[in-house]
Image 1 (tube, rainbow, N blue to C red):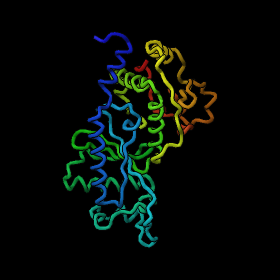
Image 2 (image 1 turned 60 degrees about the vertical axis):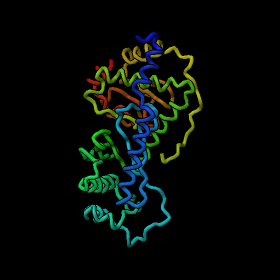
Image 3 (image 1 turned 90 degrees about the horizontal axis):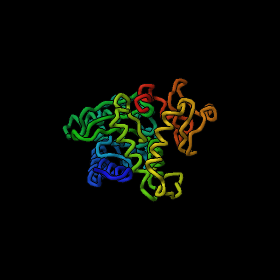
Image 4 (image 1 turned 180 degrees about the vertical axis):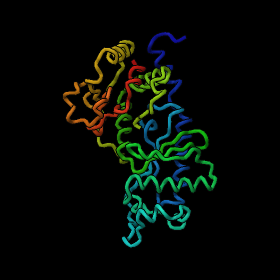
Length: 300
């Protein structure tokens, strides 16, 4: 039996946080996927983001992968660049003989980039490489993604040139790493366990932050070592229950609850949103715009 609130938080973090072995396994999977893509795309770069770099993932967290483009000295001459029609119509197996150049992919729309990559993944699956199960595209997402299950274990979401998603993950990771006490990570993991245990995400499509390889900000070191965790959790839950959340905005940048009236012109959101959390990178976006009244009632 755990003695003390802080001890319980500590044990929860140790029990559900991503282990070193799982981190290594995911890194190897990412590298393997990149090697497979090299058979079709010239010098692809596949990176992990989301929970892999925020530091608040669990062993059963989805894997967020992104295919990034980098500057290539060997740019194609215009007459050799295949357009969208050609890339979308020719058999994917042809790309093994004539690799797709990053210039060709970067010239396409995000939706077409995703479709080309999806066709490549279907060809890989046809070759029975054992990597892809339940392969499909989520085209209506803000950033289109390809979902599949790798070796019947990890659920993977793959996006193309999703530098904004990487930056958001890096921002959250910098916040977690900036806490010298290490408590912020444990608090977030504890809240995740509470939410999952109480079915907060059971009927909702869970959304996480989930870089252009570099981060354009620095989080100064801070510590939560002197924070009374029991009182902190109490204040959080009381605030969520007693406040009119549809009239307030959680602002990570300002570290406070801000009246919606102050930010309403700045933020683009559904007029019927019941919860407002300002995106720390794209300040006009409400990352909680898809939260329903039912989910909010469950949380409360």
